[in-house]
Structures are given as structure tokens and as C-alpha cells.
Amino acid sequence: APRTVLISGCSSGIGLELAVQLAHDPRQRYQVVATMRDLGKKGTLEAAAGEALGQTLTVAQLDVCSDESVAQCLSCIQGGEVDVLVNNAGVGLVGPLEGLSLAAMQNVFDTNFFGAVRLVKAVLPSMKRRRQGHIVVVSSVMGLQGVVFNEVYAASKFAMEGFFESLAVQLLQFNIFISLVEPGPVVTEFEGKLLEQVSTAEFPGTDPDTLSYFRDLYLPASRELFHNVGQSPQDVAKVIVKVIGSARPPLRRRTNTRYTPLIALKAMDPSGSLYVRTSHCLLFRWPRLLNLGLRCLACSCFRTPVWPR
Ligand code: NAD
Image (cartoon, rainbow, N blue to C red):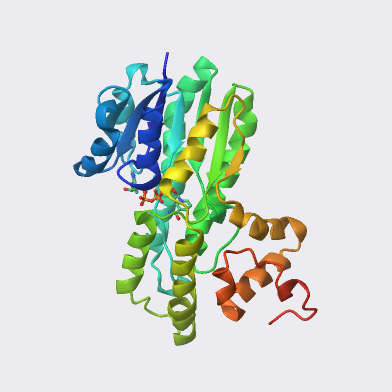
């Protein structure tokens, strides 16, 4: 029988692509429940699903921030039985910390972290009873490494990494697998939404130096990074399809090899300085290096005996 896959956040981006690819599986191994908060946005997904719509793909409403919405959604699935849960829904937040409201920060955690926890709590009893299941989490390289001006978003992804790694230990006993997928930059609406937010935001209470570092150094570097090393949501979805189809799913799977050197810096130096100082150099000293596709990490940072202060 096909496995029931429930995916959150399917109105755009990675979630939409993943839903469509799974629904078109040549071996028809999946019955996809593609969910979104606002069903008014289902047009793009339905068009992309084509003849799979109503066959191997159904669209359902789901707001990961609402208990009622989650309960309602699961009640529409036969027996409430989800074989594969994909926690994809997420929001970003960038900018100088001083200028961001606590409410905006809490919204990031409510969606990215507690949204995933809420869904897991809802599907876990049935998975445990059946002694099978797979929970896939769309994390980020920012779940592995801190990134300047992304403190709260990175923290929400670090929280997911810690939560799911901890849970994985217990769930192995129930034959339930967890996979954290860690993309680098992906060219979706995600970045556009963020840039729109920051273009109108004033970041009250932020000093001029910090504002200028954010607007004149970080934003252009970030834009070019997306342009140069950004992956398509199709490519990221392909990786997730593989993870879902594997007999022994990995706990972690990165999608963009260009990030491996930066992450390796953390492992190379347990004090953490190497990573922080290299990231600092890349932004404040040689922002153009970022644009060489992150392959220039053997920069003089490694060799400079006196670290920049
Ligand atoms: P996206 O904005 O196209 O997709 C995010 C989806 O989540 C949207 O459809 C949005 O409506 C939905 N969503 C937000 N709040 C929700 C809620 N309360 N309930 C249900 N759905 C909600 O962007 P994307 O790039 O496809 O993002 C998907 C995931 O990938 C996110 O978790 C994001 O953190 C992660 N990610 C993105 C990038 C990137 O560069 N785009 C990189 C690494 C990880």
C-alpha cells in the first residue's frame, strides 16, 4: 500500500516541489497530503500537480501554529495514520537584533520550532503503535552554524536540531526514523519575503554603524550568495525524495556541498574561534570572497597569527 506523506507549508517553495515530486513517483509509492495554512493559495500547487491531483495528491488546510487546525487535518486522514511527516513550514527573520520585536522573534519559534513539535506530538502515538514511521525536518545549514544578522532564525533551527537528535534516540526503539535535511540558500519566495520585510523595516533603536553593516555589507553579500550558490527548490526536493525513499534514512543530510568547508571549521576547532573569525573576515574584511562561491575558505584567515579584533 502507498505510504501516506503529510507535508506542511506546500503553497510555495520546497514544500510545493516535494509534494509534486512525491505525487509523481513512477512507482506510486506515496499518497501525498499537501497542506497549507491558506487554501486560497492552492492554485499553483494544483496546477503543478496536474493529473496527480485527487489521485496521489490531496490538498488540505493546516496551520502549524494551531492545535485545532492540526487535529482537524489529521481527522481527515484515514485512521489518522501518517507514515511520513515532513515538517517543512517555516519563516525567516533577519536584521539587527536591537531593531526586532520580541513578538517577531516568538513568531519564528512558534512556527519553525513549536510548529514542528506540535505536528510530531500529533502523529507520534499512531507511529509508535504501528512501530513504524519517518519524520523528516527541513532544517538549514543555519541549524549547524550561526550566521550574522540571522540570530533568531538560526536559533530556531538549532533548537530543531537539538530536539530531533534527542528524540531520534528514543524513536529508534520504535523503528521510527528522523531525518534533518539541511539546505544552504534556496531560491524560493523565502528570501523575497525577507528582503521585502527589511526594505520597509526601520529597526528602531539600532545604532548607525550596525545599520550600515546590515544594509551595506550583509544585504548585498546575502543577495549575491543566493544568486551564486542558491539551489532550486526542485534540487532540494529531489534530495528529500531520496531520503524518504531510503531503507535506512540518515539523521542528517545536507543538500549543498559548497557549505561543507564552513561547517567543517566548527569541527576543526572546538574552541569555536576559527568559525567565528572566518565568518567575521568573510563579511567585514573580504565580502567579495563570499561571492567566489565559498570555495576560498583557505583564505589568509587560517594563516594570520593575529586575529582581527
Ligand atoms: P517558502 O516561503 O516558499 O515556504 C515556506 C512555507 O511555509 C510557505 O508556504 C508558508 O506559507 C508556510 N508557512 C509559514 N507559516 C506557516 C504556518 N503557520 N502554518 C503552515 N504553513 C506555514 O520558503 P522555502 O524556502 O520553501 O521554505 C521551506 C523550509 O525550508 C522552511 O522551513 C525554511 O526555513 C527552510 N529553508 C529555506 C532556505 C532558503 O534559503 N529558502 C534555506 C534553508 C532552509
